[in-house]
Image (cartoon, rainbow, N blue to C red; front, side):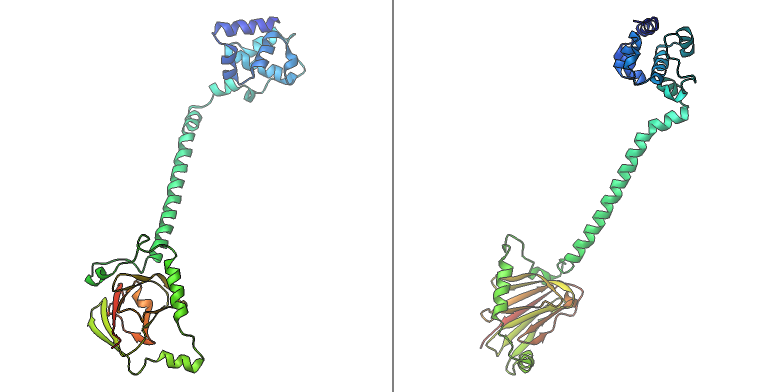
Length: 299
């Protein structure tokens, strides 16, 4: 062990510092600190680092580096003529930090956390607004009100109608629609038969009851100029349809075997009904959902 190493080690022990403590103060690896105390500078990454590490060691144990370099100049490598830059001394730099800089460093983690929290709140708010707008568009036709006619029929939930039933019933109804032979036949089908009678029995702003008679078939067509939620049930509560009708995709149902059906319409202003090609007049209030009941009599 060198004389310089003994001097530094004694100063460290006087401070009641272990090599681990000194490593924490100087951020110098323990093996380099041992090399300094033993005078084994070969373990150092270079001669420059020998002087820099000794300087930091001295400052950590309360010795004057300049005095140590002068007193033990024969032991310390002298190939580096300039003084060790002040910024390499972590101990001294830490002690000489201005108070304002020290406070800024202490506050930096809190500032970063606050910025992250604010950013998270903004992102969550944007996602919430976006999701809320989507829900309003998807459910624009099924909002419930307190009108007495509304209580007559409410949309089905998943427990009442298993997934897939709607598509099956829709496919069956679409297959039941007789194909149109040509353009002239289509125009004739669009006109209601002369003997058909579709009479409004009860009329309210959001509910109308019709009777259909004088015909052997009951074909219901539902179309929309936008998108609307529509439900179709018979008088016994059996559901034939409960989904969104979109523009350009009308829904047609063969209800000839039914005695009574109720059509629940969400977006009334965009919806049109036809019975055997004859338009059905809806209630006067097109701003709210409506219930259209049709009682079918074959006599």
